[in-house]
Amino acid sequence: MSDYENTLPEKPAATASRRDFLRLSAIGLAVPAGLSVLAACKGESAGGAAAGARGAANGPGTAAGTTATAGMAHDSDQSGGTNAPHPATPQDARAKADAMDAMHEKGIKSFPAKTAGKGNVLMPPRMEGGVKVFDVTAGKVMWEVEPGRSVEAFAYNGQVPGPQIRVREGDRVRLNLTNRLEQSTAVHFHGVELPNDQDGVPFITQPPIKPGQTYTYEFTAPNPGSHMYHSHHNSAEQVGKGLLGAFIIEPRRKRAVERVDVDYVLIMNDGYHGYTFNGKSFPATEPIVAKLGQKVRIRFMNEGMMIHPMHLHGMHMTVIDKDGWPLPAPYRCDTLNVAPGERWDVIVNCNNPGTWAFHCHILPHAESEHGMLGMVTALVVQK
Ligand SMILES: [Cu+2]
Image 1: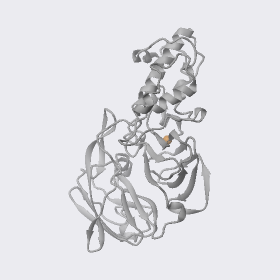
Image 2: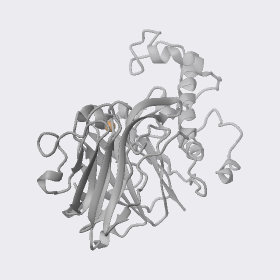
Image 3: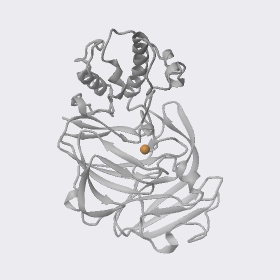
Image 4: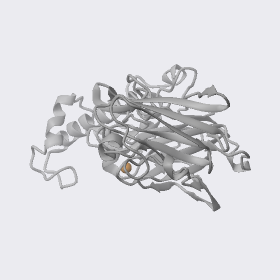
């Protein structure tokens, strides 16, 4: 990052162009240690990142603190909201624009913000007589969704989403679920074609797992693909609060299209914790990082209750799998609707360097007048 900071003017010029704003925004994006962010955002295509910049292009600068923002949020000028014709003087408008822009900039520059706890961490199995064993405990925790906002969560092994489980087609798999919640639960393997008695639905295929009990699931991993595991008991609350995770069955033989450099699981939720990717809301979401020329596979999984059209800037996605099943004819898109329960696997050929906004395109899931929020992350393509 410091390489790019050196190239910055001390203050953005009052007549800064939208292109300048984009360049500055990209510099504010930090990535995990050892990685650097490209500042080479290419102008007009990063529209989402520039949303806050549109009102700031003209006129002399007047510094405005965040205290000036109350009027915007609550419409105290009775103008009918930010979309209505605004009666304010040009000076007032400029001050308000600056205040709004400052909030947007602050959010973007804090990305990726540090929070306590990380979910969706790959869980190595314990081998027991040739069986891959996963010991999972469901319990209540406090979970930091974004800096300073901690919520009650139901978590597998203390993580939201629960640990990422990967096995291979044909593996013998055992999952021991211990219930430390104050309500019963059960685990359903979503998308996995199991014998009926392993399906995890209380009163249909098994008794509920009561508080304090441990219950064992065991099966041979069948159809490969991007699947999920989650509670199937009082699930609006239990899944909404975090009892969910990725359950990936690797195929015995990979297709050529599956040979990728980065394999990323992106789980969406929209319940008790707000709009989240892998248990975190922007700016605490995690950027996806690749090098120029690399191939990234993204496995979208929607564990929420709403659709989320995922939109990638700068490059298209090639959709290869739906619910773990290879598509007969992969197709390209830049916006992919992911409905509750669905999994979609896409490949991104990272041929366009820069920091690219990557977000749900139901706009209130991604942005407010205070800046970006919720279902926003970035795909960083490093030169
Ligand atoms: Cu959405």
